[in-house]
Length: 571
Image (cartoon, rainbow, N blue to C red; front, side, top):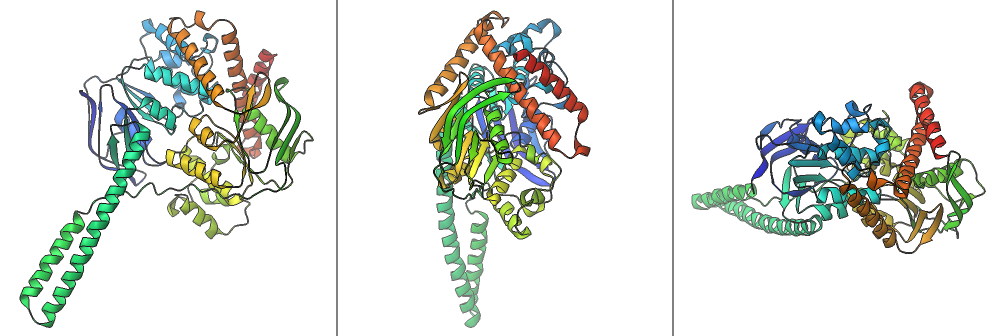
């Protein structure tokens, strides 16, 4: 296979921190590369280098002449925010081929009625679909994807898998979704120690091989150091005898041994330092028969009832997964639960011993200019030293403790929020998409911490592995009601089948209209309306919670006007 791109001996630093040193990477036609590494290892920066928007400090990147590259970024570029969806995609093709923009949007499940919606008005999942459509429409030879699965529900996730599986070009994929990586990648590249480790294996298989490689390297290094210690001791003994007995032969042999020790020191087997990050979560226990009780609860968005809960409860220590498609009201239910802590609600009752902790998938709490250490320790009766120890243990070096949390990467902000939750020692955790932005090692550390804790847990997640490993009970929102199910697989399976059927209908209809007609379109459109209503309510609540001088009244008015219009459409 011919190479599309070749990176040789790349060195690069960002803000004075060395990310790569002598890094090599080749991308050939047909490659499906999963690019993984801990938060802060430089995955996004490497994609910038491969795309050519950033030049390396040292080394050379050679690209095939005329190579076309498509990029799916983590976030919507600011220059696209005010453009309609169709224009965002159509920009990438000649005017006479604008029909391709409509076609690819339809294939990704976006109804024609949304083509005129501005990009800044979209939900997180809709933005991901828009950016994928923008990248695919130009039919690139190389597709670079930076965490494309964040914010996606299972239906859209399966739709993405189908679209990428049928893509004929090469792919470099950054993702923390283990199942997604296993389904798409045939090669895996690990970023660590400022270099790249490549395996021609799927993600799960490559992790096993990497672990074996690390064990073998550590064993070889230990044997080398044992031999070096023996030689050093012998050299020291010979040198002592040479001085004691004025024996030049012994002294010369000692010097030769020291030179051999120096050579062996230089040639010692390299052993990885690992990520240097650790995600810990300390919790407390709750006594009693019920941690949470729900009785005849109506969950609504504005004047529209989303679903009803006749009766439900969570026992102390139970781990409950909240399932449902985007827009059914999972986050709205969570907000109702949080409100009941501040304002007592006869229908939503928490055990008096509950100390509630909340993880917000939008990371709104970490969006400001507060220094990291102050954010983590705010309102907690802890010493400065205790906060510093917690941050260092979580992988934040001391020189980062005064950094603004809002300027950090999504993964770093997520870890900061978990550090604070840990210091609060909450015994009931409500986690809304907690695995978004967290690297794979962090996800597994979080799983281990939660499995080992006594905390009660109610969580939403589109990470199938996370749900399967953690949940003991499953609440499903479907058909206007919340009910308990005893096996999530039928929900996952039906979601995959439904998204597959939508993709097949879109592929058979070049205009993307006839195939989406009827009740399926109505359901999809209603889900997207509900999802947008949910987003607008979060934006309004977050902005109104800020100090008055930091609020944006004009934006609040725009959001409220759009919200009223959407509620009117639902009515």
